[in-house]
Image (cartoon, rainbow, N blue to C red; front, side, top):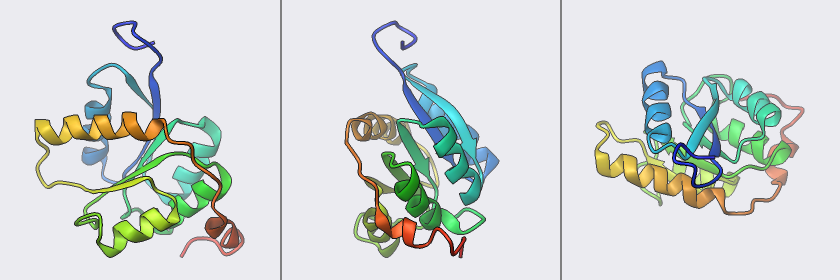
Length: 153
């Protein structure tokens, strides 16, 4: 239930290597009381393991993370534990940038630029986006399963 008792909370795993950015993202997502961050990862390998173990309803994913990068983590998550993913990364400049398109091809539902300064409007839109993608059914992607044995990189 949400903090106000109006319904179930959305379970989120946050993948971000910057401790400061991760803490900020957790605070923003949990601000309205209808989302709970159930896990946090700083690397691609942590992300894949955590998503498989916790089975969140949504994953927020930075593309610039250690152990293979966010694209690798995305492909592995979508091959092993398909989950709605919102990419939030400084490498995404707009929805048509190469990193955004690669993330969408890899199975992300949305790829948005991480702002240098977070505004109330951005935070509201981020929470709205997480609520929205939670409702989208996702499928297993073969792209990540082809790389299962190859490891990151």
